[in-house]
Image 1: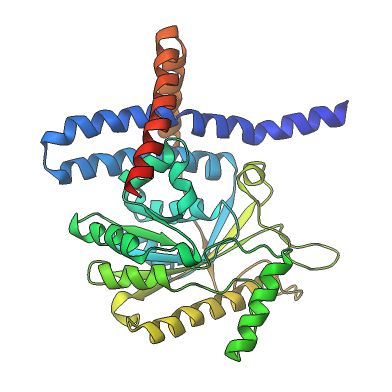
Image 2: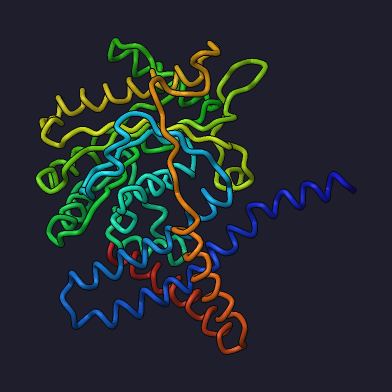
Amino acid sequence: MMLSLVVHIRSLQWVVPAAIMMGSAPCFFSLWSAWRVISAILPRRVYIKGDDLLFSVYMRLVLFFFHTYARVKIQVYGDIDVLYSKKENAVYISNHQCTVDWVIAVMLASQQGSLGSIRFVLKDGLRFFPLYGFYFKQHSCIFVKRSGKFKPENAQRDIAKLKTNQLPTWLVIFPEGTRFKPDLQENKEKIDMFAIEQGVSKFDHVLIPRLKALQLSLQEIGDYVDAVYDVTIAYSNTQDVETGTRTSAPGMPEFLQKSSPEVHIHFKKFLVSDVPKEESKLKEWLFERFMQKDLLLSHFYSKNPDEHGKFPGNSQVLQIGKRSTLPALIFFGSCLAGVLATSEGRSLYWKVALFGTVGGCVWMSLTS
């Protein structure tokens, strides 16, 4: 009985935050819709500023739970000063191992005051995610299909709009295209086969990067962004104590249950002028970046106690104060509580959730 109680209480560590974040979606969607209508007669730059502001507030709600509530310690290595310098437009590339990876991008963007500027490159199936899929499209996120179904002309058009509409941009790309799972044999076989074909050392901790999203981004907005941010992420408690083998990174529920009390991030900035544009050279550059990521992660998962659990070099703890996240919780919490407090509010809430989801999915189907 006591064990069941402990398990139940532990599950609440992620259920309650998830309920608040997901439950606030209809409120967020209503606020955004109202702003979209109000700003229709105003210059587009006014709508963009309002949309970015609203998005940044919601991202602060996310940060409250994934940083403040989870009590996670974020160690940043590399070009740390870049995060505290002037705001700039950038293409952000990172290794991908779990659903928390996009939150890491949000954490880093918060340091530069660029929360509203985040635009994700997302897998196509997410466009039908209730409310969020439709909104992300309106926020100029890019949806892409995998492998043979990929339509470069669609991605090219959407990426070009970032420059055309003069949108402040952190374009977040995960070049691997899917999550690295250390226990998935299929991943290992693909990596080994690629290494044999290319005559190079095999990767142990990352997948083979795909070029197209980065290539199209630099092709369309290479003269609009200032830099390419190369980010490598490692989560604590992702190594079997007895065998030393790497285990899977935490998903969102596990992370909110404090399964990884530390996250280590290596951050490196490349001026966009230093990144090659020609396809073969860019492919070599991207492959080199992932070779370096693999080396960094090999250091992190080393059995050598002097290397294990950290990246080489000095680090700095990333600070996200409660003053920047708690107001977002209070704002959306108050909106949610106020709406659900009355029968009229509850009726409106469910109508927004239902019709917003159906309408958004229909719109996304017609415009994909």
